[in-house]
Length: 349
Image (cartoon, rainbow, N blue to C red; front, side, top):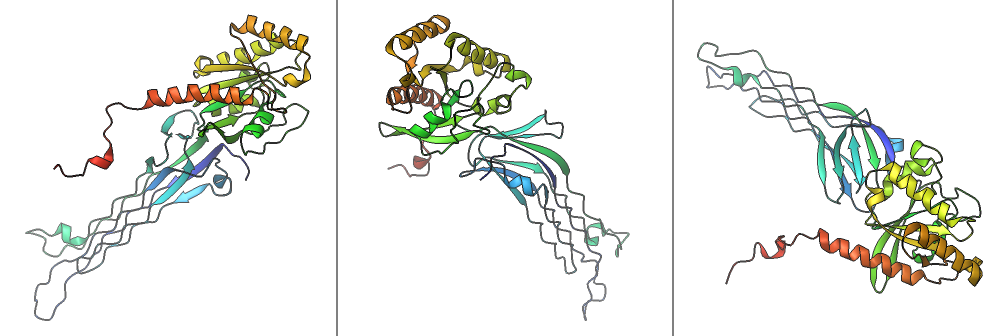
């Protein structure tokens, strides 16, 4: 399945059905009077976050969505049927923007959330509504109201617990492939990863989701390279794993480049908890490893972890460090005043 994280969509709610002009005609009823029914209401357009999706690829092939119109009213005071709704099913983490692609309408960050994007028109009144003491046989009915229409943008920001950041060829995809069942493209040239990848990592019988985005380069926040477009996918993570390749001549500079891009991008990325790791250490001698660890520690102010995805050296230690931070964040997000719904309807004894 191809990855698509942005789509432009036109939506239109259904028009309301027209009211009916009708009169009762019964054998022994001399003055039957009006009995025209009302029109049905037009269908709404909803958006809903569902489980099992992680791309907006469905909206590449269909960009127009129209709800059904309401049924017209009929005689014998019969109201027209309401039009069917249209539901846009999107992955959790999808944001809805106005046509300018800047004004946020709604953010669906949890599975099951729903939001009405366009309201269907009300049905028109039948002629029974216009009967009065001076007009016993009205011959007018209202048409249904038009449904709302608009053009919107869908923008996906993946929901993940941990995000991988680093320069191109820092070993991010190799790490993801080593700790999850994901199968990202891996090759020895820059920008092998062209779109984000998700994987579920398991450690000590616990699980969390990792997101890998294309490598960043200097100036990424200004649109240089391709990584800036996907930085939004790590905005929602609880922790960042910053990988610096042991193949870098100047690991301190490599670290500073990424930190500079995170700070320039804003949106809170620079404030997230970061675990720093020197990757691909199997390529270094003990002396070279010590030098690069010291350089990273000096520039970052913290001791980097050592990691080799190829030999799995240090992999479990890094996963445990990530899992610890994620579990702490999950505990903080729990509402201590929340009521367990399982006990709400149970009678007291």
